[in-house]
Image (cartoon, rainbow, N blue to C red; front, side, top):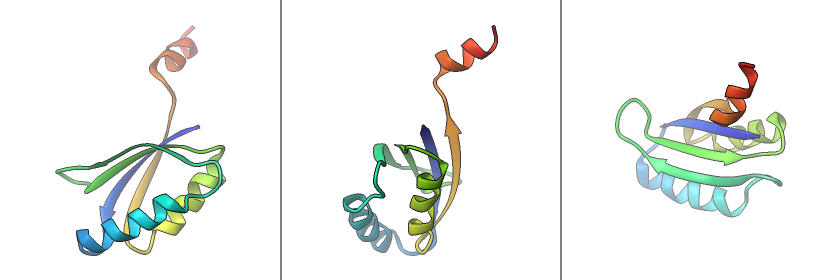
Length: 86
């Protein structure tokens, strides 16, 4: 499953960066980060990641919750979405 996490920092960016580095080295089992971006605008960062299920994805959000607030979306590819139209 693919997830997109929209992230708002709760602490200073340096603190978040240090925490993020540690978190990326100790991801929950089965989680693979596909992209990690810092952004301008309403959210400070975006993670795109793969996880085996919603429970594992939630575990990542809980671990990150101390320093960042997340809003997580479930995503499917455009091609898969188009198949649903048939």
